[in-house]
Image 1 (cartoon, rainbow, N blue to C red):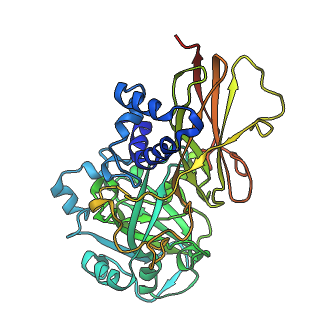
Image 2 (cartoon, one colour):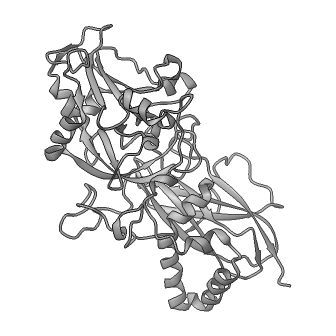
Length: 423
């Protein structure tokens, strides 16, 4: 299953309800009811037709896009090998140590050698009083579409940092996942100690994550425990977590940094198409739908723009800021969240939700996704380029304010649409 088909399945519920509402109102006489029926019955648009029956917002575990490393990847090791190296809950241990190459000071390091490493039972004991749960999108720095949308659960990393009683000279946290005991395969990342100990207003803690959508993390998703950094791209959320180093080194040690990536970039706001028609008839309204990634600057609008290919684009307008963009509809929270949750219902209220009403405090939710939809009706035949973009909560249009590659992919997406005279 490719990324577009996967996301199409996940957003089908909200898009279906949106177009059903349009049918109920008649869409100003545009005949949408007939359009929807014909598309569903004749499967003119197979992605959307198939997605109607998939009531998903959260991504099912098996449908996440994976960017693993290792030969073989750790989750493909035989069970006995995974048990031997601590990649099952019964044998998992986490070391938290001072950096021997710096002067970081801690009173009670957690180490395997001394028998004090954090094990699964102790993690679960701490989780009884300190666990948190929140929604967050998983997105690759250079990926064109989100890898998946999850409800994550875990213990704030700071709870474990304080266990070792750091007393001074700690400026950064280095952390490592298991990769076959081969230094060449090792994947590592880092955070400033301030981000671990304190959360920006409205943000969630960095967590030792052990659940996705209410279920224990599978080996493929980085289980039994992975790092989860809610406001960052996926390279910060290292899988198969086994070691944390507290250091006075001010420099990042991230594997991704050595590949010419900006490893401290926050998630960006951007839009992507899900369902667009390849061919349509003149004057025939058709649905277009998509997903928007909601980054640190929030989201106020999703827009689309149709441009005839035989018309030249103006110079000195690389991001099409002077074009006649039209607003799409940002869809509301779904009634059923999907993701494999029982009956599609959320477990105990996540942090972004009101405990009394069970509704999100704000919509769209920062560092998540939202679905959008619009009706496209073209009066003249020809070949067109269809583009989409976001306007963030500061009024800034994609790909600004951070258009640079290697800090999160947010280029304006373009698809081709052919409009023909009715036969």
